[in-house]
Amino acid sequence: MNILGIESSCDECAASIVSDGKNIKSSVIATQVDFHREYMGVVPEIASRKHTEWIQGVVEKSLEQSGLSLHDIDGIAVTQKPGLIGALLVGLSFAKGLSFSTGIPWVGVDHILAHLYAPCLEYDVEYPALGLLVSGGHTLIAKLDSIDAVSVLGATIDDACGEAFDKVAKFYEIGYPGGALIDKLSEKGNCEAFAFPKPWLHKGDDHEFDVSYSGLKTAVINQLDQFWDGKSEKSKENICASFQKTAVDMIIKPLKKAIQKTGITRLVTGGGVIANSYLRRCLLDLDGVTTYLPSMPLCTDNASMIAGLGYHYLKKGESFDYSETAESRVRRFRKCYP
Ligand code: KG4
Ligand code: ZN
Image 1 (cartoon, protein in one colour):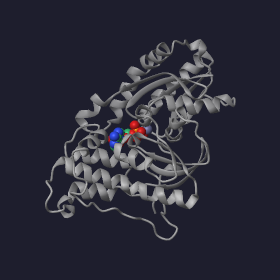
Image 2 (tube, helix red, strand yellow):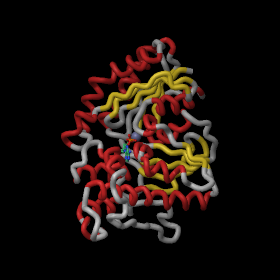
Image 3 (cartoon, rainbow, N blue to C red):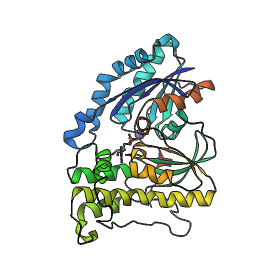
Image 4 (tube, protein in one colour):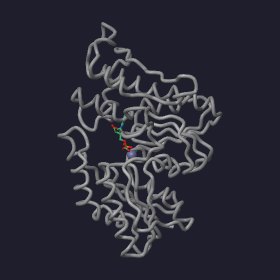
């Protein structure tokens, strides 16, 4: 079965054709970074407008690259949630229109579940597994009984890990997008120049696998001197290396706890921050754990993961009707306090 996947939840306008949930026949990712750079962050209105301009061309290019035509497409899968609502609606409306005019069935796909499906495009993943999703909008540790039976064990109670990378990069004028640039600068830095605090939320059975990134972000931006070792240079490289090590160590600790507590030794990973070189090293070093790390283009937003997961719904004969719409938030992937 050939599935056309469409992704437009944030600032990547992407389409991909994947057959049988595994074989990537084409993947087109048109990034909008150049249009958001001067604001050092994604501007939702610009994102929606660019998606509107680009979506048709991106889908046409994905068909062309695959050597297939619309007649060969058995289903359409599109990101339905979560994300920027205007941006989501562009992809969703395009998918619905294409489905209506061709009769090809369509399904909506959850972007978070799709990130956790990304490793399945490259490995034969077995379940149950633990899932680690670290992106610009989410940070969570979950138990996966199958590709889409996910129970959240822990999540950030405030900022996402990727968001902290982006805000630190913005404050220190490191560039945009921030995560990959911090990763690069960290290579030349001393990760012990600053001993940033690591909040540990665990109280009794509460918050056992939760994390919090807003305190770290504040410490790096507003309280640098307080955590300085008093001798290293206060260079961007040293700030980046110390921040990156703290941000990654903070998620590795509850992850190790979840592995120990559940006894599950398979780990699927996904999301843009999984591209981080230090995080990848830590994940590969986990003792006795089989870690499925997606290759770089499958960590960040792409449409292959959408087509891949959508295939499993369409194969079962599922299809959505045209009254379905986009949702910006998915409550179960977010912690709500109190
Ligand atoms: O999964 P993604 O493309 O979009 C969301 O669903 O959020 O993730 C984007 C996030 C951004 O915060 C970006 O800074 C971060 O992933 N990122 C990285 C790296 N590459 C991308 N963070 C740390 N190190 C990297 N190498
Ligand atoms: Zn994403």
